[in-house]
Amino acid sequence: MKQNSRWSRIGLVIMAVVLVGAMICTISAQAEKASHPELSDQEMLIDCAQCHQEATPEVEKQWFDSVHGISMVKCYQCHGTFETFVVTPEVSNCATCHVAMTEVEHSENKLCWECHTPHTFKAD
Image (cartoon, rainbow, N blue to C red; front, side, top):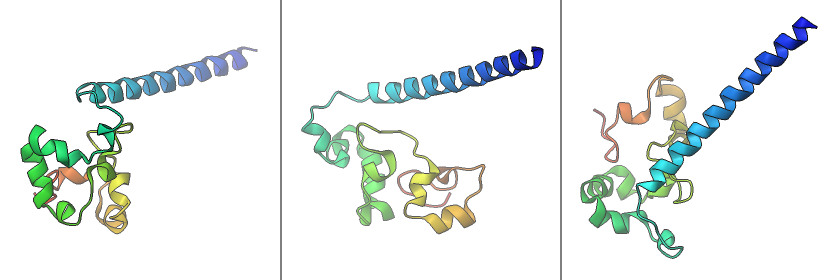
């Protein structure tokens, strides 16, 4: 009987850790969105770069002059839509277009922007 009780406690601890992790992710995502001005449904359909030309001109210019900007890769393709926006994309987002690079050249311990300047993506 003690064995079952022990496994039950371990299971509860694991469930608690997973629940806390999910809560932290949710709070983090809400905090990222909270720093962005509220947008109407219509404004959410406008290309990010259109507003960011004024809001963050240096970042928009870095992107615009980069290979991604020239190739017309849009902000949402890396950062998600307004509803799913993340400041720091996952490597899996890069793999959508750069699967060979992420499988062969990518170190499991590094993110793409640790070797490439964000938005310009020139090698550091």
